[in-house]
Image (cartoon, rainbow, N blue to C red; front, top):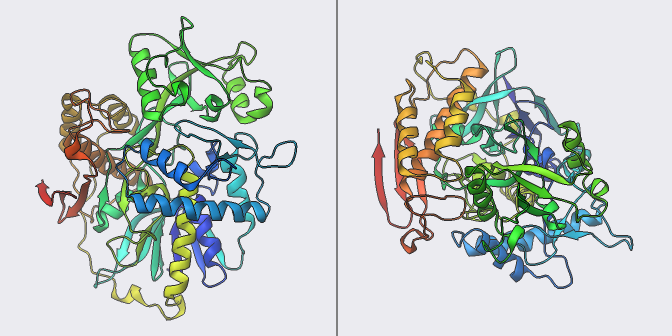
Length: 530
């Protein structure tokens, strides 16, 4: 049993930004189930969006964000993100963060899909996440910030008053440990690992969302999943991300006949919103045609995109021929644990920041390069909130003595493999969904001998991993079945249009005594699903 002032679960940009805000005031422990670098933040090729250009503005960035998200956002939250984000990025520039620059020393600002201005800052060409994570880690004090690597959080601990006061973990030997603190922060990322085709790190499978749901936190907008249009496709599978910045530099999307597949689809062509481009590639591939990124117009490609070039060479793709085979894959979830403007959930003492959270910012489809921006902003905001609030230090914190008594649980019975659930999610709850496939998936998930009861006993991390995958898959599938329209990343073949009745209408999910409770935010409707 260990105590600290602040517990952070996850080690991406949001977690590291929060830790560096808090380290001069509190002791911080960061728990991650693998290595610090084993996450989406470190893998991020794309950059950070901020309106720093001479012709750019907060209003333009705000407008692009709303358009990409299909106006499902909270407008004030979007404005505050961009205003705060610009200030934070400017501060990072001033402190020497390694952003790419032009020959004259000015910041190099790129453009990506659905942006109206060049406003994307990159590091190392296509290695922004790696450079940013390393920069943030370098600012942390080893005396005030402790990393616990290789430990998977499998339960959130609440006291008898319902206050979240700690976590339980299993290490890679399946040994159980407990950690306690007055405040617990989820910064665990998204759900890409639920799908067979994904740009995400394999460890990213929605753990934080499952933990929060089991503890009684509200989740929303789980149906809105962004599929990145361009993942490298080789030997029948996706092999890694090809950044949208490649299309920003002028790459074209062509089929095996050499035809541009975005002609006549959207005025922005290859730089249309991600859901539009992903759907077009998906439909082309459904007709049996391969799709390629034609990079022959880009000068000095290998210098501009070193990690992408290395990825292609690793998989035998010729840079000289200039055609990179691509296919869409799961990239980002816009929904998650419902929070307010600083990251507070409906459970006292529990917070969520980064992709695991649903903040009202991304709407139905995230604007490219707003994710690292979100992590930086909410990491700083929550840090400032906790500093102003003040935290009962660990030395005087005795919640372990009053932890709620729990019944002995029953053993888990899991009869599926991760590959099975990933394949079914891709086939039935993927880029284009329909009632038949969604219903089949929901029935399969409900037929598993599992419940939302929090006292299930697990023998191993692998069992917990599969259980969490089952929970989050069920939440995504149920939400997707309930939203009978197409909006942003949620595309229904049987309901192909946006519907005014669904505008700003959130599907809220909650675990109520082991049953799934569904609420519709704007309509004050409530349904209970066994």
